Image (cartoon, rainbow, N blue to C red; front, side):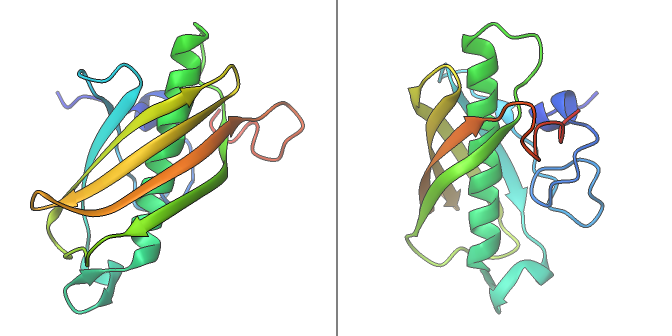
Length: 158
């Protein structure tokens, strides 16, 4: 049996374009715990032809979405685990930035890793890296915050 991702485990009905398991048109990223990093996740992704910016290269917006959603889940899992919560908190992106280091080839397996660099009760700063063929293609950093009841995204994962 295939291991369930954090998205499939904690938000199986999510419709997020990047990470929602229930979005048939979305990317459906699947993130998993990294055993070598206390608060970090890993994922693999293979782009499709319609994810290209120009022949053979991945669109920067797709790269940004992969890093954003993966970083968001890294923060959410770290907040849940460090606070010994029973349910994953809904986190949103407060800010993030990416650096596109080199063109990212389309159709190859992309490897993305993330880890928390600063963890507080309701927020985490996360760094992310995207590799193709062992080469660093993009890196990012973001601040992700757990929202409270009343925020439009509060119930999005339940």
